[in-house]
Image (spheres, helix red, strand yellow):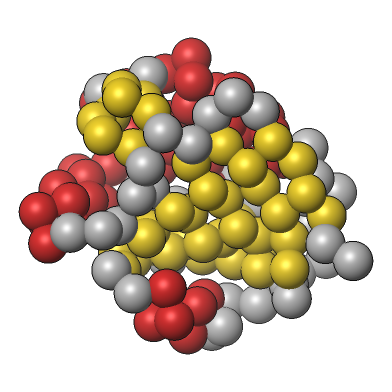
Length: 127
């Protein structure tokens, strides 16, 4: 059985030892929204660390404070993070963000879900 929860900004579920985090359509991701998203994710993790597939394809823009917060605080209870994007332009933006925000766990950007899941398989769930 899949554990699943949602709020106005995202849906989160755990399936096959991977935490899936799918953003709802968001015009601008702000720090207050980012804080709500982290709280949502942690609410289903039961203090376990998971590899996270973060589907950003519905996010149009994000402010710097939100990105910095998610790079650092958003790494709590994560073994690794795969950021799923939908275009080469978004991929370049996300790569720049990773170089400047320095996430605390291995984090990579992908345009293909299967490649993202392959990357996450190297960082299994931990108790």
